[in-house]
Length: 213
Image 1 (cartoon, rainbow, N blue to C red):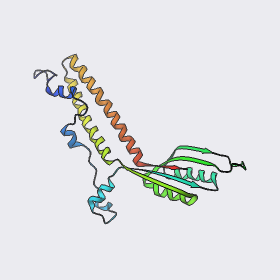
Image 2: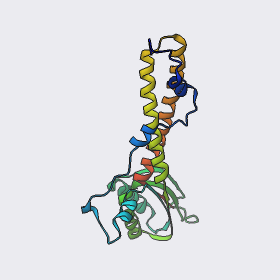
Image 3: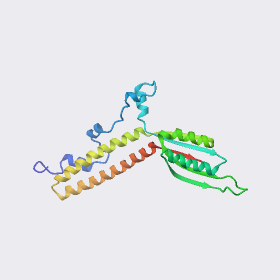
Image 4: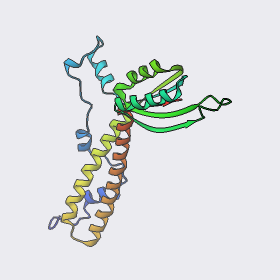
């Protein structure tokens, strides 16, 4: 740029005028890769490559429990206490029914609980110790591929952002600067959008969801 030519050279046009599906070779090279577990992390006799794939998966676990108890208030308090003990939180709680009405003795609660994924099984075991579990359903969603693709997308956008900032410092005309700013605004919007997706994935993976009725 400068004496070498206008900001409207081929490279600038490619960056500014192309759609957001532009992915640089450098971004693909620098895209985050799943780390491999150390030898000391081996927990089974399965082949190392199989263990690595299992360890690095991004799994969203959801459990649905139906329970019954004769000690309703005590059980609800127990659930709240265990949630705190295991480092989780109550996302939603709905309690209905009254305990003193002789004609409507049944009371009901629907509680959505978030607990660290590593404590999910232990938490459910505690629930089973204090109430009768009448039904249980668990789902596990593997979002590993989407997670990696989103990370790569962010890496590509960051390269575009840095390049645009460099060109803005060297812009020679107001027209060039306006086009660069418009493009930069788009890139920043995309970065915020995909960053939000990653944060949501992280939250869902790190904290499993239990819907307790």
